[in-house]
Length: 342
Ligand SMILES: Cc1cc2nc3c(=O)[nH]c(=O)nc-3n(C[C@H](O)[C@H](O)[C@H](O)COP(=O)(O)OP(=O)(O)OC[C@H]3O[C@@H](n4cnc5c(N)ncnc54)[C@H](O)[C@@H]3O)c2cc1C
Image 1: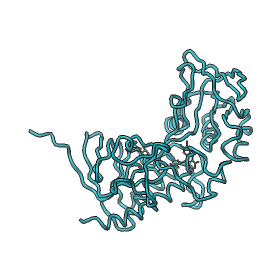
Image 2: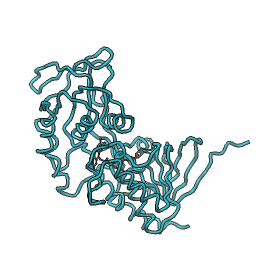
Image 3: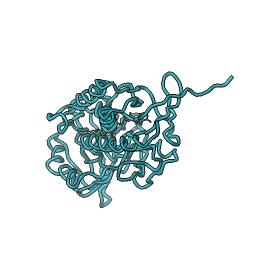
Image 4: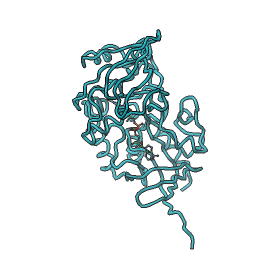
């Protein structure tokens, strides 16, 4: 008796139901492509915006500002109305040659053979371990994504007086989440000599009634069970202790590219993103990539609204940019699909 792995076929497989993946699916479907499958490992579709309860999404597409969940819901509703299939609770575990994907779902493992695949797996913040922060392994240490998931999706409050590390856009998004959860951060710190975001965005720290310490990093986290204090260190080597009950590491995004690293597809070790050509096509022509899994190079000046540098390293790109790129790459996928024999 053979235990053959179940096989499915499709024209297009899209890994990730965030703005880039959904926009690509909608573009392809509207162009007449059928049998598109979007694969999403979470129990609900929509990507990161689903976790961001504050208003700052969708202005370009919907001409009004929406919260992350409202924006995600509208995107998913459009995809569903077009009959696009979104497979939830399903994780792609390997990328095989020529578009052969290995997946795992509640029903078990199976393989999906797609003529073309879009990798739209997004990005994640660097956790404490990857930042080499020393000190105790106490409770109360989170990233913004985890905090937003707790506050907005589970209505849980992991700390009351955290220290916030970082001054990227997402750091200020974290402040809005803190406000929503009644959390009062004790300070915000930045290792560089100026905040990553521009004035007046960083003025938000003062509006929240807390100091912003520049040229400051964590020397050590202290806490037996929970975080009790953090010892800060200035660029001149001066140390001071600050009482807090948590640490929130924000930003320093890195592409969600573990699948790529394990695969045959060419990978850029400097940016941790797939090596792609101008059309978003990977070294294996069956694969494309879009959204924050790529180090997006924004149109000149587009980041200048937010950041003090034109193309800040590791900064997350806003959802509208990922949406646009998903649609653009889909057009190239469409052309390439036309050359595939049925
Ligand atoms: C904390 C935070 C706050 C933000 N605030 C704003 C804001 O105010 N305004 C704004 O415009 N933008 C904001 N952004 C940026 C915005 O969320 C992103 O630009 C956008 O979500 C990126 O879209 P994406 O499609 O590339 O990836 P994502 O939205 O990250 O979606 C990727 C999807 O892929 C899925 N996935 C990953 N790996 C697999 C796998 N192996 N198998 C199956 N599924 C997989 C994930 O579960 C996820 O749903 C914020 C981002 C963060 C992190």
